[in-house]
Image (cartoon, rainbow, N blue to C red; front, side, top):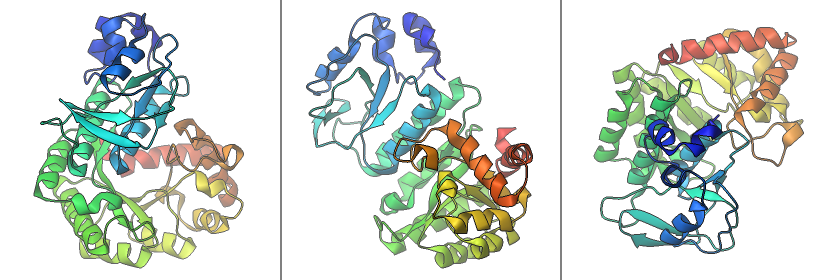
Length: 342
């Protein structure tokens, strides 16, 4: 969680926040309404800040904004919520994007992802900037790590430049895996050939750097198994596992980890609980997929990392094992799945 006392010490905040994600607060010591000034500079109207900036506003397409929002949300905690909004328009500005967000009111500090020429960036550049910010921020805050990869929604952006950028990030010891990458044949925001091409490239990167893959799968289980097998993928984490017991067995037989999220608590998802009960506990991980898939008791709200307790309890109940055993074993599994955590 961010140390709120830093907001009253600009020098300390500037040192802790090396990429300037809270630069408005740092410059003004969080004693004046910096959000209004930065909002005006960014071309955002109708902001009504009240006191010190407490929320971070992130606007951007696809996985880049989601990844940045997830990371900052984890760091800030519920006291400083991260709000993700879809922009209604965009205008170029020197060195920054100007997001037009009519009707938004609240005290915010803006995260502007810069571009070399001030124009709207391509998706690969936007993703690269977001990931670099994640790595820089992870470096300044113990207990926080990053992954680097291209989500299947954005697979059409994969090219040589993107591969080079991802590869540079993988050399950072705080980047613990390649991903989130995979196949999503439900949304189909990138054509199937592009998704497979990007995935195969990232499987190769993971092998080259001896890093695990964090895999996203939706409506593509036969294809994901085929591509990973053809690429000789050895270290795999099936993120937000959505398959049944048979698929879980096929994955764990390959030595892969299946990672359960908040949707394992939903009443209709018996197949997930059956999968959790069917496989060895030493192949199970737990997560939240925040801000998505809040557990049943919080359904309809934004999810948060602290809700992983609900996931642990659901897995323990499905397996008829104690919560403590599941908690300790999955924590140990995480260090095996992601060796750089040590």
